[in-house]
Image (cartoon, rainbow, N blue to C red; front, side, top):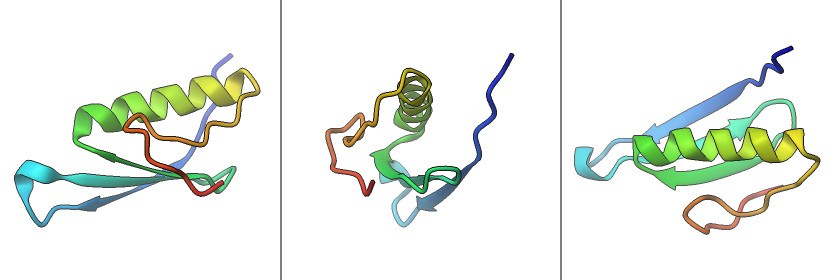
Amino acid sequence: MNDYHTFVVRVWAGDPERLRFQVQHLQSGEEWQCAGPAALGRLIAERVHARAHGETPHQTANGEKVKP
């Protein structure tokens, strides 16, 4: 059975070559940041996987601190 997650994604698009994303997991309130669309997909997949295994991730794929 699939577990559904809801995210809000904010995009800073001042420079199209340097897109920045802030992701908020609505169920937990956790927030993460990353750069680039590929990193966004990896970040969401990593965080969903970590939550499914009872882990509480506190860094992004880029190594940035997150707000728990």
